[in-house]
Image (cartoon, rainbow, N blue to C red):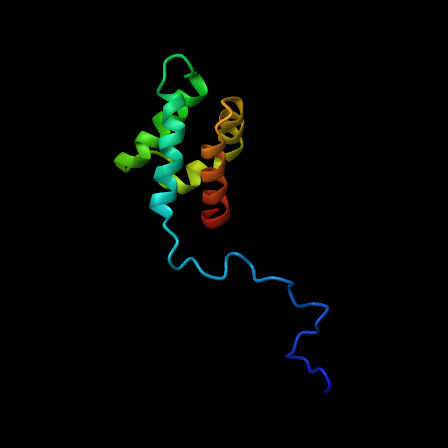
Length: 108
């Protein structure tokens, strides 16, 4: 059998399907809500809150009210993922890290 221009060679074919083949049946809202519940435990606690997370909460509130420069909660979470990882690692919160990883893999 010969290869033609429309058939990719075995060398070029991906080894596994890309995770973004379909967003069908992904619970974006549920995944975001789960991560936000974890995050709120720390950023709403006066003992662990700080100016950075206060700014994040202000932006989140603007999104939820439909105002502000960023109107996408998923984008806000995506742009803060490394900070959330650091926060959850600082608190040895394995469940929060696992739920954040799920959000990253399914939604970002």
